[in-house]
Length: 183
Image 1 (cartoon, rainbow, N blue to C red):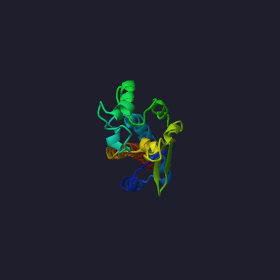
Image 2 (spheres, rainbow, N blue to C red):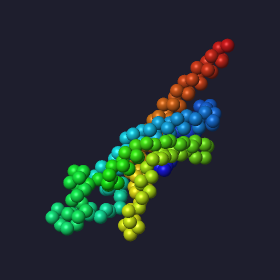
Image 3 (tube, rainbow, N blue to C red):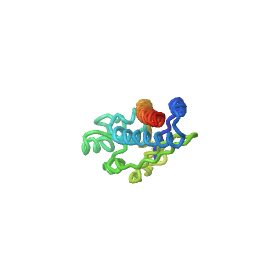
Image 4 (cartoon, rainbow, N blue to C red):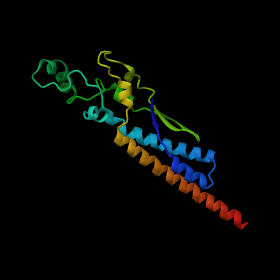
């Protein structure tokens, strides 16, 4: 499960001064979190499986990584994978985990104390497999890691979506007030 926590105290305080009730605000935040979850899963799931992901997400080194062609290690470990796939990709041996990680489910929590988005990948049990305890490779952690760039883009995306939703609610409240005041 991948959790993304976003702090939005200034936006939330501004919404409460507009006259939005806490329950309505929590619903709006949950909707914005769902959009963020879809955006994250659709745009960044595949980046965990590209060759440059090891450096981007800080994956543990793999056996044969950095081996030069012509060495025994390259011939035994890195060479066959490069021949089979064309490149060495992290988290990929057969491609099954990459295929199964595309399925996801979102769970949100929005209260006055906590705002949380959980991206659950129910079919990606293959990430729980630990190839060797000696090498300390945690594929689940590597699959669910978020880079600093992704985090900043996610914050900006969430803030933008939440702001749009709050503007729509503000317009709706102004229309209701104008109709209520004119009757």
